[in-house]
Amino acid sequence: MGLSITIASAVALIGWIIFIGAVSTAMLRTMNEVGLQVNSSTDDRLRLSVQLRLSITDIEGRTLNFTVSNTGSKEIFLQNETYAWNTAILNYNNTDWKTYTIENYTVLRISATGTNESFDLSTHRTIKPGEQVLINIQLPPSAPDILTNSVVTVVFATHYGVSAIQEVFVNQYGERPLG
Image (cartoon, rainbow, N blue to C red; front, top):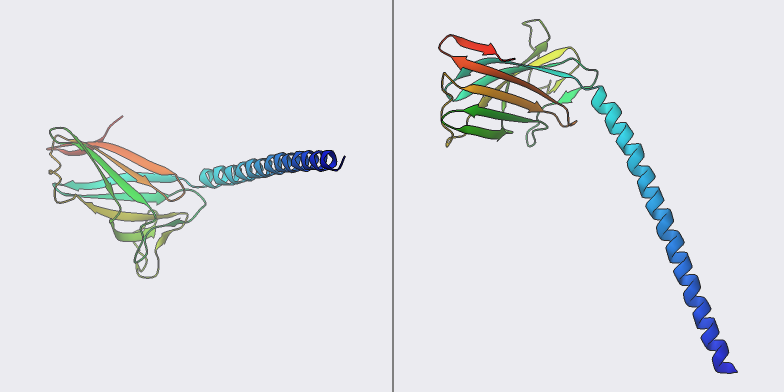
């Protein structure tokens, strides 16, 4: 009789442990899913408030300048001493298509949109709503030059996951936007 009580108690204990484990796993999984849904809606609202416009202003052999305007309601962080918050992606056709991800871009000027007055770059490292930034990117040393008959695409991707894009055709008469 003593052995059967021990075995029955062990079976009951194992059953309770399995039940508590299953219930706690279900609760943790549900809490995780709810947390992901809450964060997802916050990210979506944040992305909707970030709006950019990109305009390529100058293309020469190994260098390219473009302007990014912040037309949304969120501030865009650019660079600090050690980290670039955004990425420029350059794609062009030389003899074949070349794509380069460039994070060591140079900020030439930050100004209010439509003006020539610029802010001090040492203290103003963001693009606030209604401001624009002039950015210079250099091709990597191993990259071929951008030819005058190339199609050039520039994408500026922000730390919010929002990007702006422009594509131009460069020829002997300058540049003209495509489609």
